Image 1 (cartoon, rainbow, N blue to C red):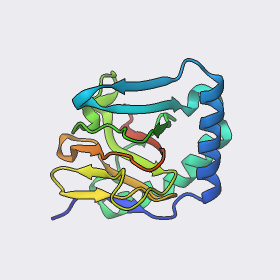
Image 2 (cartoon, helix red, strand yellow):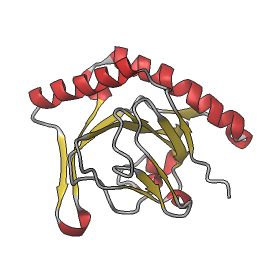
Image 3 (tube, one colour):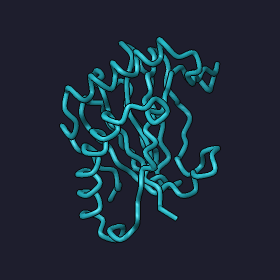
Length: 187
């Protein structure tokens, strides 16, 4: 069965991943208006996130674009029906740190978000910024019956639609870092 989930190992350099993590840590230490998500019981989530575009880090945004573009091009070549879609990231790059025993464990899909642009999301991308131990902190896809293991420098691209319900599995050993975002259909 075709999953439409693709991973691109070593898409990002170790240096880029480390600089994104370092920048994230500096920003979160200095800024008190950071999004901290914490819910209890069944909705366990314990992470901190920022959007790079809110912090004028143009060099990281440019390098992230240069990293993502070949992955998107490869994805488009493989799935030719999306070649002619005008896709844009809108330069929204979310960087997230998930603490041990945290994560977003609820099945969800990206076109079902609470913002006005979520219906225009066509694809999701995630760049894993650090490697997690085997069978820990994976991204799990319900209907595809597959899991993606976080590995530093790997980009994962998949559809944003309800066919790709997914969740983050529990982090145990140490914090998990990702950069993530969406490819929108340009109106």
